[in-house]
Length: 126
Image (cartoon, rainbow, N blue to C red; front, side):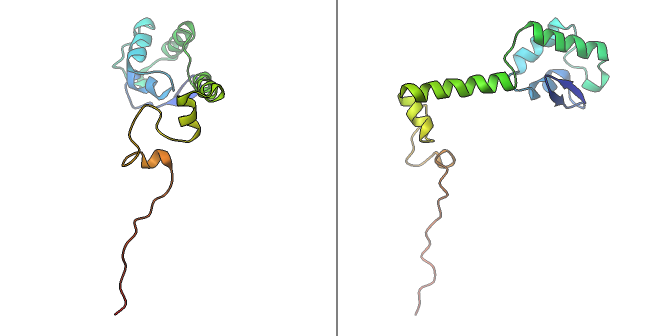
């Protein structure tokens, strides 16, 4: 397995799809990285030479992308900022409710995270 940005990317997949295992890199960014590194996005990771792997790592550093831990901490800081200023979105984050206006009467069971049990009538004694 090739290690890029601290993540072991799968070796049996194409480069453009394997790069997506790094948090913060999507398909478009992966294709851009392959283009700048002069690597065919359809080649398998096992077929990459160590020189090509180094080139991909170098391009990621040059693009100054927020990936992995930096991106996660940035997202956490943004949510914490919303909670600290007391905005509506911050309050919804704090209460573990949907933030973007979805309904909660019938949906969002997983977001509310309360395990609901169906109430059955059971067997009635005769």
